[in-house]
Image (cartoon, rainbow, N blue to C red):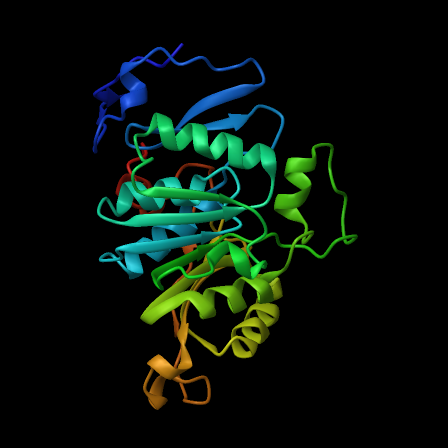
Length: 284
């Protein structure tokens, strides 16, 4: 059954539109859950499969913060639709196109889109985004988002669920593929925003250079106060859209922001991350 419509949650007033699914009885199979993600928007997930992460939320938040006027958004390797769902909530006037290869993830994403009343502006495409036919003839995008897998195949334990494996390991392309396809489909002055491990930042820098992109902004993410950053958020633009003074060869061209801290030393939510969560319609 569908969750009860709650105008507030533990003293926090839920913002944004109430989706059509919240007014209906929704059958949630035993192997799935229907979880809050942005305001009244919810997302279907497998109990034992891939589930949305802080990395997904931050990617959508960072990208939509950098391009708050985006009217066309592309999400590459979109999985169950977590990044696109948050972006759709943050950018209510935008049309979104997502591309995902896993059958099960596409099925869940389409269920979430229907629940949230986004079918008229979310086009979920089933296939490998490296296949040129997926986006052939598509108009360029103001914002391209990506939360790619982090690890080359064979470099770690795969886990026990195929959906998780494809989200963690580079079975269908790597950060270089994301950057290449993003660059090919950006509008003039458009932005590609993604997340990747800080210890692999050199791979992101190589991928950007190979695709003709310039990293103009990045922000490390610290998951517990006092620890080293684990991932970094990146914003890239095509080199041809930028003046020479912000190219990689220019001193101080990249704006490196102070780390975003997720949790305090005692395990509580850091005040700044609480504000981030509020800005995507999620309780702090």
